[in-house]
Length: 271
Image 1 (cartoon, helix red, strand yellow):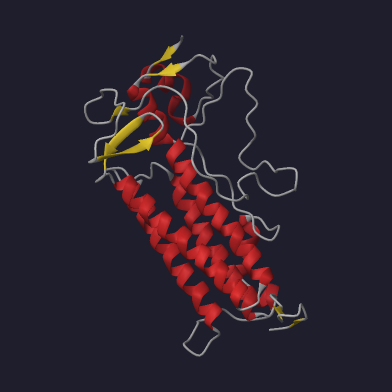
Image 2 (cartoon, one colour; image 1 turned 45 degrees about the vertical axis):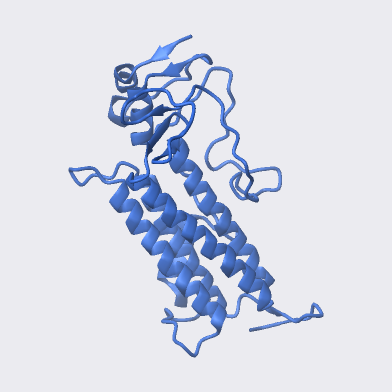
């Protein structure tokens, strides 16, 4: 078995300038090495392992993360250790929770607060999806399903210490969505919107979702910024920024009549 130390990883990584080559399949990491990987979101690969790139697509043409949620999560590997005392834990104490595959940590950890925000955001997306179906906007519901999957992608990337995959929605990249949300007149023929109490309820649901995604972004910034003010997980912060842009993008599409209403009998018409 090959044991990789934090010092060895630092030498290979060189502050992000180097490339960590595939490691032996039997490689194991010291606790400090695991912390280093998680802190900097380093992707580790192993020899003879074919790992799909973060932007890879599945056979249906959608990103690999755009799939239904699954439970339970199957974990393998060494017994997790306590992040405070460093001792292996075969049974979780009530005041600790599993912060990654290798460690338990006190429930007061800011990372658990971040996960709570993500859990709330995910729940709100699911509720918005159900409401879109109730109001007979199946096209909108389909796009919200994708955003629910992306919530799970963000949470998975944070837990496993890997880089978040880029967001795509309706076949559009993050940069394309960003352009539409900054220039709606150019792309959709409408001005920026400011939702009001007389607007359709589903638009207000989307606006609430956008606000909650901004809260999650701020929580990520607070959680993953070091004492010097430098982000330790800029990919998570950016992913949530793009997520809120995607929700506003859906608001704009709805306001522009791009999601046709479907009557109970299957007849569709413009909003």
